[in-house]
Image 1 (cartoon, rainbow, N blue to C red):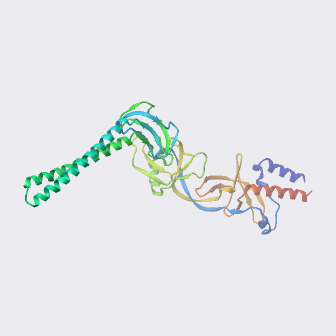
Image 2: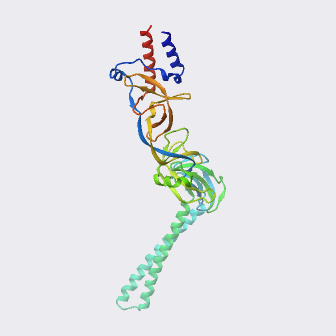
Length: 363
């Protein structure tokens, strides 16, 4: 009895001592069917060999909106760190001058249309008389020229009105895409000229990571064209949509610039963040187990192994990286074909209860 109590206390105190702790032996098949958790074998698979390099997150869309007309700032609706939807009005410019110019342009269009109507009537009248040979050809030519001139004046008036309309619309400044205001360059009541910066915004929908790749790795990375972004201890990482390779090396550092383009809507990343990028440079066969089978207790990493007789034991292992498909590379402590519990919590409970039952039997 004392022996089994010591074993049970050791298991509760720390799994690092549990390598030698196992359930009592049971008939093969009967024990396997009775286990309250699923198991999976450790298998040897081809695993991508990766090289991890440092990178910096960058926004694909970072824009400074500038004034396209001059005037006084009358309203500012957003400030730094505010989120703006595409098409939202971010500020307004006083439009008195622009609206006056638009009214004048509308009047000019109306006048040009009246002149054109008059020229058409005159052209039709002169043409009828000319066909009866009652006026000279020079008079008919003048009527034709007057008609064409009236048509050209109307086109010029319409163009001037379109320009005035655009200038009026430019007094209402809208966001070109959804994003966050990074810098506000103007203040309420300030007079701005054409081309003066108003606000700088950045979109978090489309991000990329810039990496300087040593020339010794660039050809391997070009060949495989696969990578993932690692940050905040996430071993699986974020898959990279595609890679953009700069066709030249930096003459000072002898590195090639590579952009890892991410899918839209990635959460947790912001421009300027420092991250790591794992580039695939080859592959090799390694022993792997499902990630959910691995249990971490302080500095000890292990798995619950189930042998052919249904005996459950906690075994310490040494692990490598986590693959993109959710498997952990086992470097030592486990052999191919050995079965591991996919629910470590259920396996631990099962092991403790089995030891307790064995202790009662020997009491």
